[in-house]
Image (tube, rainbow, N blue to C red):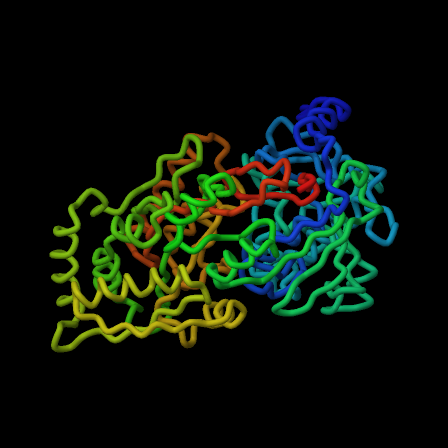
Length: 533
């Protein structure tokens, strides 16, 4: 085994000096108010999906690893770990001072229970496939092996062993994802599906759940039992579900919230002129795209139609005229920002838009459509002023270029996600994927035929096989080459239409201290503080 980390003391000192430097002018009231996009579906860490729930779960729970404000992977509930020379066995030392919010000790057994629950088919997690690197996880997810065979074991109360099927370079980054969080076994067994509600949720993070008023707010308060509570400064955080960006801006300007989840694109110039010191725009590891439902006509077995619609989208106009904040046209599936990885690109990526339009019209006709016999299609998107504007623009491009008749369907977040999963009424749907960890695989895996978030129902055995090879490949260059081959298949098959690569955009009050942008846009409330104002 080789030692990964410096001694714990050195790590702790480094983290404390970078993350929590208490200024002299701290406000007496340490309360943070932040916008959070859509209303979350659930705070069950093994069933939740989407950025809004992930933001809250990072405060409520803590994985084996966490992230420093700049995004660096650092110790979480595990104070240290060792990795075997072949990179397939990890042994974690759980902090002896780690406790649940009810005072119970957090043990290695809690992580075993949580990881098993996450891959258990009975849990019905849409994220279970993310744990595929763990030995036997895929067989457990498929119901071929019992959960007890998952490659995780408590060697004692404070020592956890995780065995992988192959060396996985991004594994430590994966361990701060909610699918890997421990859950309090006694609470789950007592309350069942209600264990994640206020008054019942026992968590191991820096905060505890106090209130959840649907379509109003979620209130968290400091967890006095958290192992690093002495270094936590903010006492209370309110998360507000505000789907309309203009409404969020108004509440921000009125002083009701300290940090927005987003900004309205059409007001970017005004914001940049009038609130420049409070505007944060940073690179963001994410792809904004439209997906096709491949389970039924008109897109099932109709590559020419899918390709025509993709080519008819002028991505440059979208990013320059509609969004206009720094997003870049995307002609790959994996966005830029991953060191060492060169993404595959559409074969028409370097064409002029005029050339793309000419080819789109040809393919549209070959697919059986014309202006006399136009495609009529529905585009679904979740409630958002920004999403609506993009959908309207793309519908107009399709109309002008091909004669397509588009009906826009706006749905509340929970309904929207459920319809995407069911694949019964969706035809084209708006989507975005933000990397869960800094590796191409976080994008590649969601299009695997067995992934719970493959809402297009893309199935290509060659693609799945390449991902399997990549997951077993220890050589970084060979691994990236395999993923690039897989990405090229996606771009050939067009199950999705990448449109642009994201930037993160927030307005943040000057009294919110220690905020640092990072490429995953992960910010822990415990690392922030409020100064006098």
